[in-house]
Each structure stands twice: as structure tokens, then as C-alpha cells.
Length: 286
Length: 269
Image (cartoon, rainbow over all chains, first blue to last red; front, side):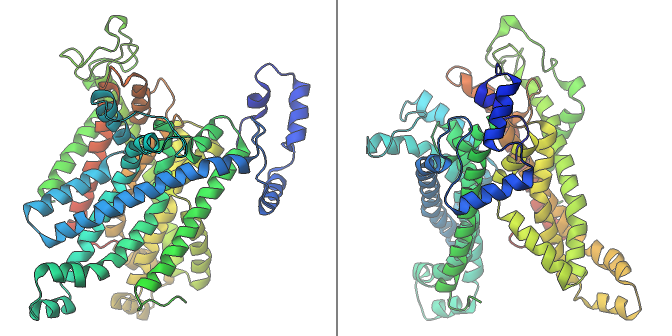
């Protein structure tokens, strides 16, 4: 699918024209594009993602090794965003128009405008190089050394999760304010409930429904963020695989990685829709 | 434009534009000029943002980077609008068949996360600044079309449109004279969102080495270059990143101010 002759990455610059031609024939590169695409798609349905042009390693094996790392980063970031973003948004709404609200809102605007790869580099420069608290980059499997593993994941998680934390905080604040002005909340207040009981027991539940949708929609952005972040922190995940694949014109690798990312986004969207119906009985799945 | 944040955003944006247009006049040095005696010089009076591994002035390179970023932003956003707006108008007004067809294509398109789609397109077209612009435009087209379609669906039910139809106005006339102007407000506000997304996507691609190619200094590629010296030259990554941050910040403030001024509500997009 990509331009550029992959035989250069496979055989190097020195190979003869005949060698190149033979390699092209073996890889099926001489077939027209639609033929190659259909052949690839057919193979994928049978669980065969092809082999890397460069290393001859099956793409499926590469995916199996790398997907857990990217998924871990994505889940950690999402966890961070929810655990931090929701309380921040609730606080903002609870103390609407006070200094707390202004601070939290400013923080979330900053979080959304910060280019995440720059944030990652700033975090490394500050926490690793200046303070020496955390290792700057690298990867150690969890089975080998769980403590080091999570130490290495802290900065990448902050990097990927910052923007989503901000988005969730802003969404939570918005929908909390909306819900707090509804009639049933006024009823709850009228019967003499304390403000905190109203906020947490009555309003929050309904306010979280749109937040859930936004969180679901953000998964794509998280995966995109993970791709870039992995290259900063030298995490051997899907992102590194994809970016290296693009540079090396290693088509099967690029196609496999993108196929996985897009399928997971679709899956998450579906799950979000179903959850929506579960959490809010007013929504019917048609 | 009465909000103070909107004014701050506008000023920041103007500074950006002045830098991009007036680089030749404003920049203290040509961006590619090498100063062998001042390699990795820290910020000083002579070099306010320091110098890089070849002794090139970071400030001049950041100013030139504004030209690249704003260029990519303007062209890709313009392109997204030029294609997205008509498609949205057609989808919203030309009947259920066209609408269903267009919307299914757009849905499929939107299944790709923005950055992943941009990566995929640059993978197909090859690295480079021009291809980055195309990629960003392609990413933003369906979003624009969907927004405009939503606006058309809302406006076509308005009474003044019914009135125009009763007066015998043609479909084409109704769409272009009566509905299209009504979509402009939200489109303008949405454009500010697309613009900041364009900046982020371009700099991400350049950061990965797929956008602007050396020696042209894009903010993203400057940050990437800086990571090689992050132990002893923090300024190399810091200032270009700050430029991206402030630009995106400015665009979102201006967008918010425009939203208030034009009184439009955007759906989840």
C-alpha cells in the first residue's frame, strides 16, 4: 500500500536488480494493488497477518507481544483520567464560581492545550533528569520486576492521561452543573438534604452518563497518544511498531497495527453504546 | 469579543501571525545560520532561547516554525472546509439516499482516531510537510461535513425555510441563500477547533519525523531534536513546545469568545 520499494529495507542498497526482482516476486509486490489488498484481507480473516518484510517475523506474533504494553498504557491513562478528572469536575461544580472552580477550570484548559509529547519530555526533564525520582525511559516486563515496571509506566501514563483528565473534568463539571439545576435536585434539596448528599447521591449518577460517552470517544485519542508517547519513553508497544514500520516501508506491520487500533476503537464505541443503555434505563438499544 | 480571555487569545495569535509573516525582519538570525563557536549555548542576551547542536539560534527557528505551523494550519483547515462544507450541505439537504450514503462513508472515516488516520495517510503518501497538510485536511473533512449536515438538518425545519419553499424558491436557492448562511456561525467556531487540532497533528507528525524534514524547523521536529540533548540543553525542547502550547491555547480562547459572540452551540464533535 505504501510507496517506496521495500526491497531496499530487506536487501539493503547493494542488491542487484535481479535480486530485487526476485524478492518482489516472492512478496507478491508485483501484483496490482487491489489484488494484494484482497489477498491480505483474506489472509487476515484466517488469522494470518503476514510477515514483516524486514525481520520475517509473523505480524501476529509481533502484535501479541506489543498489544499488552499499549493496552496497559491506555488503561492506566484512562484510570488516571477517571480517578482524577471526575473528582476535579465534581469539585468545580460543587464550588461553582469560587476560586476552586477557577483553578480547576484553568488546569483543565491547560491540560487540553498542552501538546502531550512535549509534556512527556518536560516530565522526563523534571522528574528524571533534575530530581532523579523516576527512570527516564525503557521497559521492564511486569513479571521480571513489578516495582521497576510501574515506575517506568508512571511518566508515560501521566503523558497520555493528562489531556483526557482535563476533558473528563470539563465534561463532568458541565454536566454536573446541568443536572444540579434540574427539578429532582431541587426536590432533594427541598426535603432538607445536605448539599453533599444532593451532589454525590442524587446528581452525580446522572451527571456521569455523558461523561461515560466522552470517555468512550476518547479511547481513540488515547491510542493515538500512546503511539507517540511510546516513542518518547522507548516502550516497545504497538506505537513504536507502527512508526518503525512506516519508516521501514514494512507494509504488513503497518497494516496489522492499524487494523488492531481501528478495531479496538470500534469495539469500545459499541461497548459504550451498550453501557449507556444499561446505566440509563431511558435509553433503548434499537 | 468582549471576554478578556478572548482578547489574550487574539493577541497571542496576532504575535504568531506577525512572526510567521515577518520572519525575515524579526528573526535575529537566519534559521539555518550556523554559529560554530556557540554550540548548545544556553539562553542569553545574544540568544534569548539558546542555540542548538550546530549553534543555530533557537528563537529564530521558533519564529520560522510559526510560519510552518500557521501555514499547515491555514491550508489544511481551508481544504477541510472547502470539501467538508459542500458535502455536509448536500448530505443534509439532498434527500435521504445521498444522506445515508455520505453518512456511512463518514462514519467509517471517523472510526480512525485522528492521529492514527494522519499516520496512515502519511504512510501512504510518504513523509513530508505537504503530505502532512493533506493528511490533516483528510482527517478533518468528515468532521466538518458532519457538523454542517447537523446544522442543515436543524435549519431546514425552520419556518423561514418553509416560507421560502412556499414562495417557490428552488432547492438550490434555498440551500445556498437561506440555509448555508445559517451554518456559517458554527462552522467558524468549529474551524478554530480544527485549526488547533491541525497544529497538534502537524507537530506530532513532525515530532515523529514524518512531517517537516530537516533543515526546515517545525516546532514538532525541534522538540524531537531537543530530546537528544535533554540532559544539558533543556531550552531546545522547551521553547518550541511552549510555542505550540500558547498557539493552541490562543485558538481555544478565540474559539470560546467566537462561540459566545456568535451564540452557537456545538454538539459533541
